[in-house]
Image 1 (cartoon, rainbow, N blue to C red):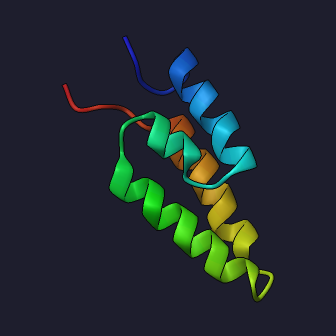
Image 2: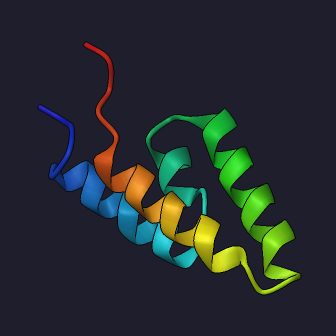
Length: 67
């Protein structure tokens, strides 16, 4: 059983805390991982990367795979 609150999602959220997109990559969502990483890197240049960083953490924590 995986989904919100599962151990895998907690680990993914922790990984995204350190590197945006890493949690999505651990969940097997390559495209979403690239999107989070590129957007965060681009927005950190103008000091708004924290928005994407938080989105990445929340997205990894709330992910529920399709059954």
